[in-house]
Length: 197
View 1 (cartoon, one colour):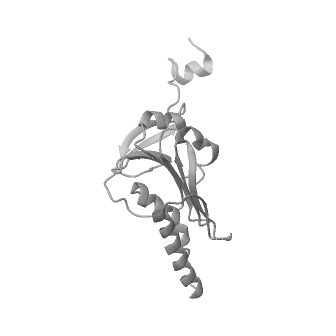
View 2: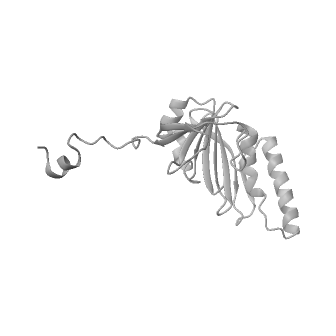
C-alpha cells in the first residue's frame, strides 16, 4: 500500500467538494487511481459516497478538511504502511464526531475519540484481541493498523488495502490553477529569446 489518504463525502456534490478542496478534474478517466506522476484521483462509489484519493498519507489532514466537511457527512482516512500509522476521522454537520488513530509506538494501540458507532467499536475490539494473541505468540504482525481501513469499508464500501470490489473509474485531479501551462506566445522559442520580429 505505501502511503495513501482519502476523503469521502456521502452524496457529495462533485463541484462543491472539489471547490472546497481546491481541486479540479484534469484528465482522462482510468481504471487505476493513479498513473505516472498523477497522485490525486476521484471516483463515485456505488454506496453513494464521492471518494477523492491521494498517494500522500498527509494530503487530507488538518485544517485543510474544514471546507469539505461542510459539504456533507465526511470520512477522512490516512495510512502509511512505512511507519504503520493509520487514522480515520468522521464528520457530520461540519463537526468531527469521532476518530480512531493507530501508532504502533504509542499506548494504547488505538486512540479513540468521540462516540464511535457499535460496528466500529467491534472492529477495533476484534483487532485488539487478534493483536494480543499475536503478541503472545511473538508474531511480527500489526493487525490494529487495519482498523481505520476496515471501518471505512464498513461505512462507504471502500478499503484501501484490498482489490476494488467494483469496476471503478477514477478521474485524475490537480490542484486548482495547476492544470496546464499557459500556451506559448506566437513565435515560439525564437520570439521568446530574441523578441518579436
